[in-house]
Amino acid sequence: MSAEHGHLPPGVEVITTLPDAAALIPAGAEARTIRITLPPGDPGAPPHRHPGPIFGYVTEGEILFELEGRAPRVLKAGDALFEPGGDVIHYQGANNLPDTRSQLVVTMFAPPGTPVLTVVPAEELAARRHLRAAAPD
Image (cartoon, rainbow, N blue to C red; front, side):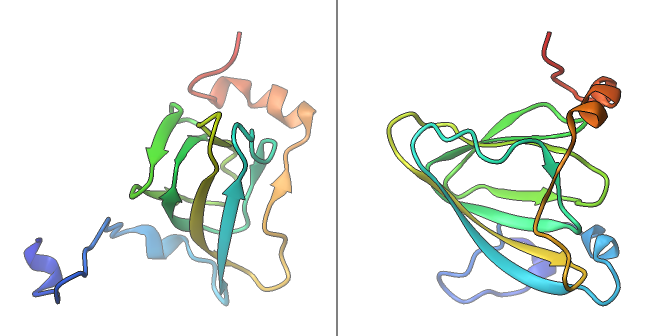
């Protein structure tokens, strides 16, 4: 247990601390808690972006997670995730398991009335290809 969180009661565990993340929350944002359940092998949403930062936690299975500028990684049940939102493209949020569902719960901080996600057009994906850490051949 980290001293910065003090004494925690039994059963309480700090999974991750992101000291600078609060600065990314848009002024006047609302908090939205969202559960994403992906059937076996589901590729998830196409490349998209979110209007504000997302903090989340994988509750079941495995998620193949890829953000612009970062290599894809597999998040397993119990792993936390952070996405800055804004201009950053979220390339993948797929169920990495072919035979069971995967699920995550996230909290998004976004201006009221904004969409949860906006799909990135093919032309923009092509123009930003050089920013993708694992650009396909």
